[in-house]
Image 1: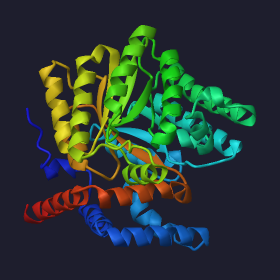
Image 2: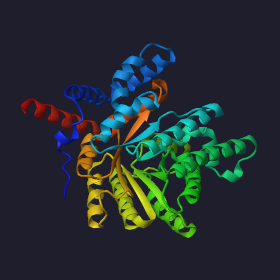
Image 3: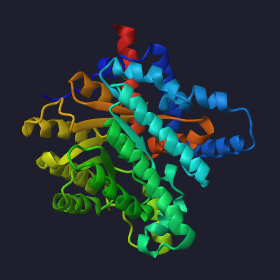
Length: 390
């Protein structure tokens, strides 16, 4: 059965007319690329100068894309999503720290999200960002080969491994699956190596550790197939979250600057093709995989639903999840959930200043992704008009 992603009554049934109007004006603003760029710079300057703009951020973009500043603040969002059969993935969105005390504190907070997930069935997954628990510089050096690390760098890397293991072991002990997010290509090999070790350790019987593959990279489909082969040889299963990717411009600029081949696909069509081929591959080998399709692309979500039907995989099968970000693509999330598919929303939280890099990425993503903001706006307008004429 085809899913109607144009059904705005279902898509926005969790939003009041006032909330819809706020969302409309926010997406209208972020549709203006130059304005987003200027606002991003001014916001960083204002926070650096300790100007009192937290309230403005909190009542606008923060409220649209985040659950709160603290884990307990997310309870309202968790319940609101659960009322419509949508799970929550609590995402402590603090990153880029460089002191071990800060990195340890982030690790402890991530473990709290795992413990909260254990106590609340409306939270099907936990998640963490590798640069939330590791210095970027250590991952960058490890990317050249862990065997090359010496002295203090090797000690730092061992701490990173211990943080990964601490998080994944807690997830394993409490039987809460955990996503490990993807990062820049020049640290991703190091992350892959760590995640593979965690999967081998904790995915022997059930799947508790998921790697994230950015399919706008031309090498990720081959990586998916190669790691599947390795996992079968070593006797573990694979958790995979498929996304298109979030660092395209930065990746291309760095490749050009450093003089190496860009890891980015030549076209969006190539990305779409590999994304859907990866969906196919996972479902064809579903006994070895658990899959989360992290996508705001209507065609890919529809395709996955059709593949599940074609292969006789039940909508409620916990090995297949759909996921979108809070504040975006409600027409996909709510309509899928309304048809009883497994759906979850990423719900970021954290102090406003710390979450700002995430918020800026969301604003820039909505500006740069072709048609994304226009689609959001058109659906919001359609629902506002529907309610007015009801």
